[in-house]
Length: 165
Image (tube, rainbow, N blue to C red; front, side, top):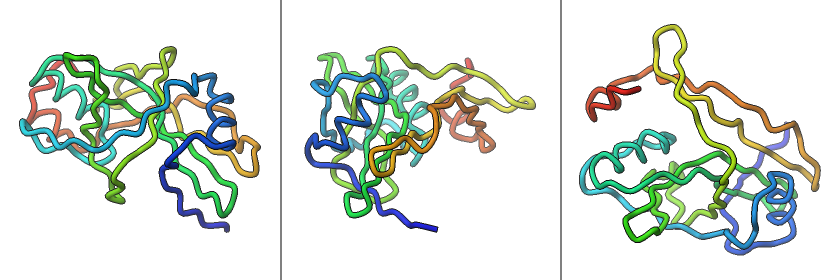
């Protein structure tokens, strides 16, 4: 099994353009975002949608759905992970979700057509999102698919009174 070590690209290259084209996104909207630790709460890794909702509850603003791009250029591998960032009152994109690898910046591409939907599974809160989209040697490894992400640990939801979930 091949192992990959994807990192966020620092600029839009041919592989980035290719994955953006496959996802029907606009390469002119690519931004590099630094992590911004919110003062109002402790955000959770891999929990961007809930982190963004809590930030909106605390400070207003809105949510922008999109894709974080990471790449292992040594193996011609690139991946897009569905993601959400907070939009502040000035319209700037702010990433309030910490990264497990402590990367300083991530490449983010807004997606104005795809959004998450609230759901549940066996009484547990869940969201309908999108699976990671991966390409190897310029070819998609699978079709883009909707997935259900279930929150088994609901303490974050309870702690921040996201009762509408």
